[in-house]
Image (cartoon, rainbow, N blue to C red; front, side, top):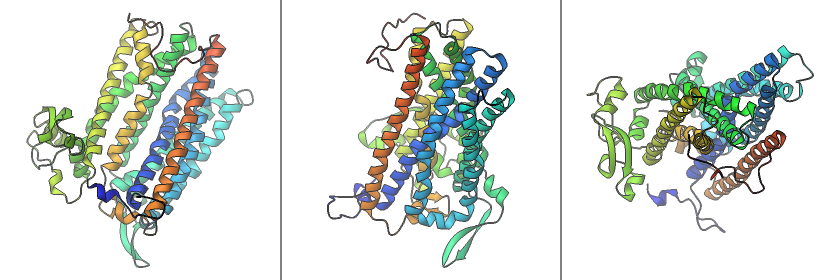
Amino acid sequence: MNPTALIGAVDPGWAVALSPELASRAQFGWTISVHIIFASLSIGLAPFIVYFTYKDVRTDEERFARLRSFWVKVFAAGFVMGTVTGIPMSFQFGTNFPQFSEVAGELIGGPLAFEAKMAFFLEAVFLGVLLYGRDRVGDRTYVLSSALVGFGAWLSGFWILVVNAWMQTPRGYEMISRNGMEVARLTDPIAAFFTPRMTWMYVHMVNASVISVALLVAGVSAYIVWKRRDAEAWNTALRLAVVILLVSAPLQAVHGDAYARHVEDTQPQKFAAMEGHYETGQADLHLFAIPTSPDAITDPRAENLFTVSLPNFGSFLASGGDFDAEVIGLNEYEENPPVALVFWSFRVMVGLGFLFIGLALWGGYLAFRGRLSDSDRYLRAMIAASPLGYAALLTGWYVTEIGRQPWVIQGELRTSEAVSSTLTGTEATLTLIGFVVVYVGLVATALYVLKWLIREELRTLGREPPSGDRWYGPLPGVSDDD
């Protein structure tokens, strides 16, 4: 990448500013990176909330009431943060990418409106019942409220991914001239809503959210169990999280393998960037890759990487069974996405995915032996792994979004053409800095709330952490005995 391409106009008071396109892309990328953490928290917590609420009402056991109360509060905090971080994104369509709004408005306006009117308000109304209605409504109504909150979270994700899937594989439209501009006109709502990418994205995203939250639940539970071995509720939560990981982590690997073949069929350029495949022909599968020179970090190619590869397995996976299948290389295209970001993000995502499978199997073995809560080593591992689900989710999202470049609408509208023509580099850079500062503050606030909830839970259990005790290791008194 040429560094001079990143420099915009020089304005008074500023030495340099990013170009409007780069600053706008970075701003939207940063905004959605933070927002997606809270959105996926709601999606992933939904089945936990429903289960804990149902068990609380059905059994009237204190452990389920405790878990329901704690995680509903976490859900509520995430819902508030998701709302605050998500609203600015719709405005950025107009301020930073007005050409995209003009071209695709008829296709994306409906799903975005449905998300607000159908999903957001459904969540908001019944979340109030969950927070304040345990003693004010009947048991059936209360359980139904938890189900509707969860349904609202999953429905919200559905409508958002309808928009994104259409941008990846647009269908159900035709390009017409309107006021001297080529715009997309909706011709088939079903085809536009259920594009070839939609089901793949939705299943992968929902399951990634469940994995991320299962790791979070396991990490919080492990920390509390490490402090209080007799905390019945949190032993229950830890076992449940391990069971969910045993199902969801391997499922993600199997689904991801099939998903990659779909990407190769519909976006071969993105697939080539994922594998660092430049020359058209048979493709190896790089299980492991490290750069042999600094240049390889930003330009990963076969000749500048040390790899552990399976010969021709890239062709096998891309084609679904043919070792001799031809895979189109990046040299066939005039413009390519930032290959390094896609290549390394894909490897981080896949590597973490296999780590989660290992943690799930380890936990399943300990649970089978009745030693899940007794293994300090495993408790420490789950505490350390608790944020890694979101790291995998974000890097997967980067593969999806950065890998589509230079297109904002695949094959129809380039990102460079979608950016505002009146936006200056200084304006875009200043707002980028503002969003970074504000959103860092929001993330810090969310982490503080979670830490406060955990400390209050420990106080209720009769043991408050010592002053200055760190949330993540090293954990004092931890042995290596399993």
